Length: 287
Figure 1 (cartoon, one colour):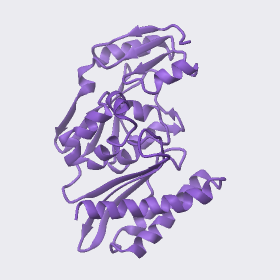
Figure 2 (figure 1 turned 60 degrees about the vertical axis):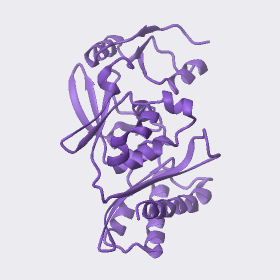
Figure 3 (figure 1 turned 120 degrees about the vertical axis):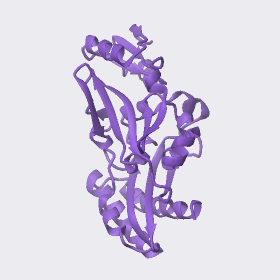
């Protein structure tokens, strides 16, 4: 049985911050509720106050200004997947959003919830990592912008204070010549949590990789860029030999962060294959 709680519906960010402050760490934010409702039913969550942020207009907008794309934390995965701005300037993110769960989950779940839940398997996180996304965090103490990776403390844990609210995700628009892709492996094609995922964006100049960003989901305790593989690939030609060597650096990073586990013998070749598949997919789609 779900325990009793107060239900508050603020209309502004300021009002939401006031409620969070007053709750003294005994509140939870709800937008889509795809994770929170399950936690309430299972008894894993028992907040005294639930704060519904879906009526805050500022959190329901996608905007562009001075080369920066901003996405409100209450934007749903369906809205991300269909947004013309996200498709044009951050396609890797719209591609990932279109593969999350079922249509019902995509219609309810939000980008802010996907981030704050801090699941290592969250599909939007690797794309946001390769987009160099920042989070706008607001509270009664003020406002700050945080590189996305700094929000994560561990699996299902963030570094946000109990009274802080993630209001927006922002990133620089990708240049039109940047190639990108997102690939995932799940137990079945639809409605499954990703067991592994890879996001890449890269730029080509004179047949060689000029700039590249790689992030992998579900294989490290917190979201990370694969910096060693990125460094190796810069200036390398677009050939299978380069991709193979880089894939080994991706798996080495995974092992260094997660350690040797019973699943490592399975995950190592799979994450390498997924990375190579992501590179091929980006080349095929934008050739």
